[in-house]
Length: 323
Image 1 (cartoon, rainbow, N blue to C red):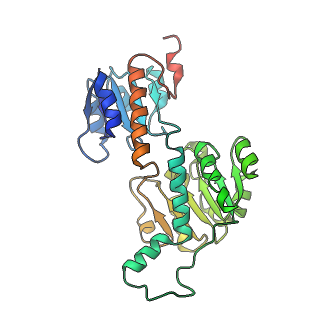
Image 2 (tube, one colour):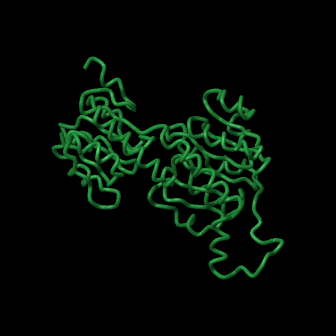
Image 3 (cartoon, rainbow, N blue to C red):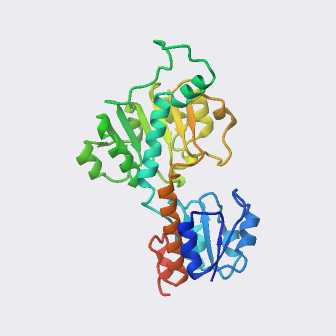
């Protein structure tokens, strides 16, 4: 069968696909345009896409032969799963493999913002460092502070567990009680308002759905401490970017660390001008090990789906009912 891959991914995944099928990989190192995806999909049985690719109804319906969509990501809000399901096309993702990697990036952001690492690096490289000063680059202590987790799923849980060495008090919001966090950290499940009011550091780990769009906006930012640090490694639109810019400019909060953006890959121009925000290019899962594992999982999902089997990480298994 023939598979269209929308970007070059690690060889670990491409080699698996090549053993059984013919693959066509988008040759440019950029996000393909919608028409380029549709063109690349012509005559193909499978589509291996990235989170940055919008796989909407037009794309899915453009190729009658399409039998399988494998997303090289945990999230799948880039795919019109409803249309795929209606057309009996299985859709898969790559969960689990990037849990610790993403949690580590959130911690890297937390430290970078709190201790002004990026700002200090720029300052030093610019030749401004003239010696130790009692008021130079003052930041926020991390140990013995209160950590707020918005969304205590796999990544939120892994992130919170890594706080143990810093003797932090942990608060979390989630639909369910997280027994792991409560038993291992003495964490407490609270409402969003209480979490925002009491937390010194807040890290977001929720999926992008209707209920989480602009979950953090002007009202929520005003509730937070003026010494608080906000970290977002989940999805950009969960945070109202314009409101965040205002909060950072007017010092409602101490700072923020972002790996995702509301209109990705576009980054708000005002964010780029601010020193109290650390910006990353959606690279939370960007380690050699994790990206390679993601490629392998996506490829294995694809192989199974094209064989008519339920992929190991199928998000719409109902397409196999009555097949």
